[in-house]
Image (cartoon, rainbow, N blue to C red; front, side):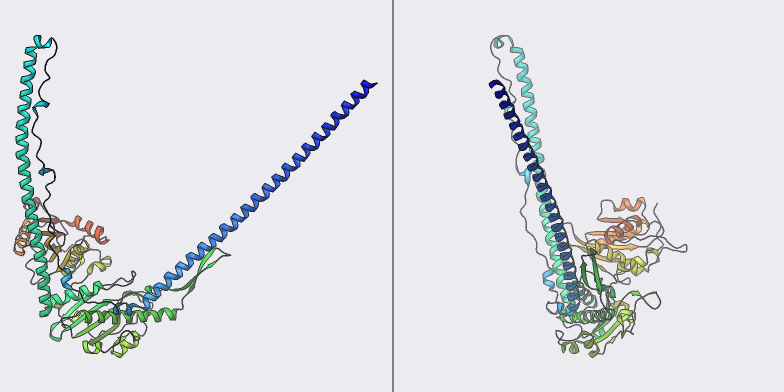
Length: 541
């Protein structure tokens, strides 16, 4: 009986233990499920927070982007408002003395040539002495080794003597070349500085070529916003001391059509508020007036010699006539003013368009619509002997065939091309150039110097006589290099004559390549059927 009760008690105990285990397991499962749910919820909350943060950061980034766009817009608008003020705070005089160069004296560095080679060392050639029994049985072999070593040593000594003689010759040659280069550089610097002094003397004497070159530099140095594509022509009337300027004005496209940018978060889109056309037109008229006054101011202020008494400015612009859809180039502003009249103005406080009217200028009643005015002096009416070089390279895209240009325009292209390649060029007058179409200066030390350039627009091969003439001109001009450019080509005789001389021959293919590579112009060479070469040179074959 007692055994049965014990068994029952044991079974009950086991059952209670199982119940406790099941309850513990259930609690563990519930705990795990709750923990899982908490983890899932936390993950989802983190994901939603990340999405919200990303959205906030994206919106902030777009807002910053729009702010930057509006800041750039405001800066550009301010620059347009300040075109005239910007030149009043700078000195427009070009200090010609600052263009002078100084000879850079250098010490001769022979490099490795200064170090003599080591004399041959007999110990490096002598055979090792015999050891052991070899002292008694290898006397003949040892003698052969010694004789061979002596021969090798003698040969090394001879080579050393020859090498040292060659080194000394090379050292002397390098020293001579260095001294020659130094002398040439000093001579080039002196010649350059003499040219500057001559230029200053010509300005003081009122020489037309110097006057136009100087004021061309003045206008080139003037800094405008990047989207202002500028070019100009200058002419000088000596009798009246009158400088005539035909200035290419920027088009109405320089005026922003957008007033402000805004980011619309709901559509994730950057929108713009258009600027009223009345404001665009008014600002463009202001730009035209500011550029005109600024140009006249720069010319008068830079004239420390007092050469210019009167300035005539014609402000031109190229664009499409909205009434006809055709390309036109009207004059939007024209003014003639004297130094005395202009000196009476306080440009820091004038209203530009009103100021021009006070100077009795003719100003377009609607510049944005390209309404023209009649120039007070047509540029082409100026004596062509006193007209500065024309930058025809800028207009080449509308006349891509080199054979359709006038001779002066073609020579101008050559001059412009070499300017784009880094040379300082000046086109010469056809009636007085002595066969030189363009004179250029390469400012590089030692390798640079004066360069004479001739341009020949030919259909047939250029004769060797033209190359000989260039060489003679090169010597007469004291130039360091001559360049002959043609739309055709050269024969063997021309290349043979130029070989070894400071002459470079550029044929039609090379010219087209240089125009594209240095000026970004894709031109073509297509002579008309009735084309005749300007000179009857006999082609060399």
